[in-house]
Amino acid sequence: MVGKQMAAAALAAVAALASMAEAAPAAPAAPAAGGVRVTVTPERTSLGKSDEVAVVVTITNTSGATAYLLKWQTPFGAVEAPLFEVTRDGQPVPYLGRMVKRAPPAPDDYIALAPGASRSVRVELSALYRMDVTGAYSIRYRDGVLQLFGKPSSSYAPAHALAEPALPAASVYIAGRLPRGMAAPEPLPQGGAALGFSQCSNPQQQSVTEAFKAAQTMAQDAGAYLQGTQGPRYSGWFGAVDAARTATVARHFTAIGEAFAGKPVTVDCGCREDYYAYVYPNQPYKIHVCNAFWSAPMTGTDSKGGTLVHEMSHFTVVAGTGDWAYGHEAAAALAAGNPERAIDNADSHEYFGENTPHQDLR
Ligand SMILES: [Zn+2]
Image (cartoon, rainbow, N blue to C red; front, side, top):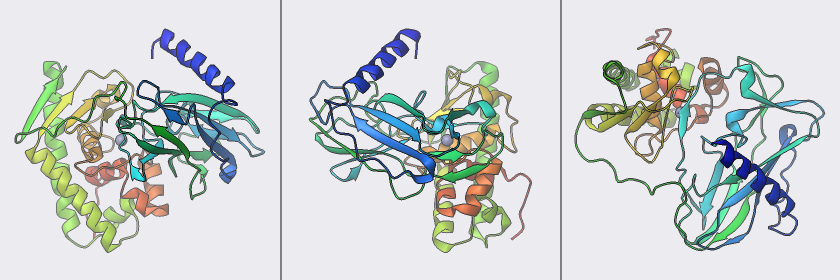
């Protein structure tokens, strides 16, 4: 966002807060699970074609100690993750925004909330979710996204995740409208295996070509390992061995391998963000690589090849993974504590594919 837009957004947030009393009723307050309360309040509950679909998100620390939140798990900045769960007439509405690969959290990736403190922000949702169809929408903060930390840390030390189930939903009725700021999903690219480039210099194209080969090798190797009995390589990243979960992971790697081997993939080098890469999950097979990608090794932990595996897993038509935890430490903790989430986590797929330190024991 540029300064002017930011100022406008700030003003709008203030206006939204000021008008809340006369506007939509807030969703009922969530229980103070884990010491942080999240409310999602629509600016208006009935919207016409030209209205913005905006909600105000308020996060309150209801505990007696300072709470630390990871910036990218909150909307207090650019929203680059599916932080909300949106349904229309009971059916899930797809997220249209970015899915990012980030480095493990550093101390300044945390936001501190003092005991009793609240922070609010206005979020325009129709650029992030498909809300162009008439219907009754329900919007809530996605379960399990917001973790509460006792201290900022460069390692993974969550005090606890917010308790589940479920933060309450806010309801909005929207009369059909055009999506704002986000093109409708593009048709699936046709054609066979190809690696294309957008905004890449010659040296960048060479580097991406090598990374692409490394990603193909990782996907093949992972697929082959998943054919046999699962050992520590599997359980280290995906948790306790279970037939249904193993089948899901095997299906994911089959799809990832097929995409690298047989689909028209485009890598765009125009991103200048500090993170590794991002994709729009409904726009296969275009992968945007960013600053951290260029300094990553070709193979091994958090590598260029692995980053491509991570991003490929996000596409809805491939494996539709999420980003529940970033980095080796957090991904290993996720495998141990929540295997269902681990098999839906992009970094877990990347680390299984990268396989560092090397493990092939069964
Ligand atoms: Zn990701």
